[in-house]
Length: 308
Image (tube, rainbow, N blue to C red; front, side, top):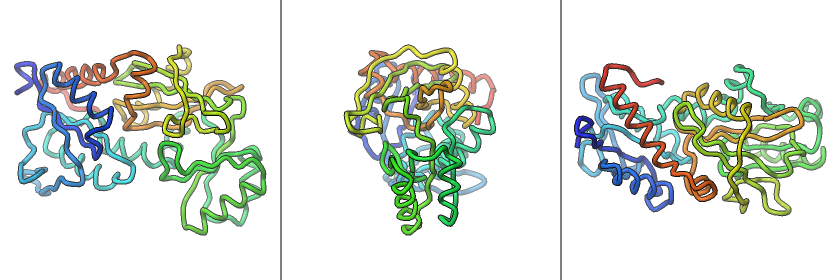
């Protein structure tokens, strides 16, 4: 297939080929006349050359791909983004550029970049030493507060410290393990709920409210939370689109809390799952992703460069 006759050759980079997200992307891509394959990024290998950079998989060169959809797990970010970068070097269009994925995965860097843009977020602290724990706790509004591992995902590595003593214990334990973490203001009035805005291109194509189960403060569906469709405000929509654009992401899950001071950005996910958002809203999000790819390829075909 080729872009000229309407069909594209698309690769999905994922280690979970049987996941809902991958299967929906394959199903929707085939329905739209594309050829879609799933590749495990860890089984890809590459030749780094200034004349002909290539990516190979099971002894086959993947230069025939028109576009790739990265769904790279946090645990394989380093190698996964190296593979993605190699595709980009060879001229393959990537739905999310490798640099944008790296920025979003580094929680500290992402917070700094987003804060510089003036996007409202819970007060966040970061330190190497635990020598001045008391002062940092106060700077973040005092207990209760949230302690997050920098490399956590899907709600893992996130602890609610309800007292100053508990916060001190968690931070000291993380540092003893040589783990870096963020200390963050706890937005109590959110009542264990957050809003996931699914951004594709320059639009929020779907949004849901996730509610933590009883006795839990993390609203992630992987942690047992529930979800329902919700109508977001103009300000929430603006923040979601701005956050994705600031990090350079074309497809993103942007998580927002409703606080007494207005919406506060929590996190930007470069590989947002499709199951929760599609089932709770009834919106065909996979279709929106392919519409973006098709439009982007048309733009590239007319001589414009990929936004990165």
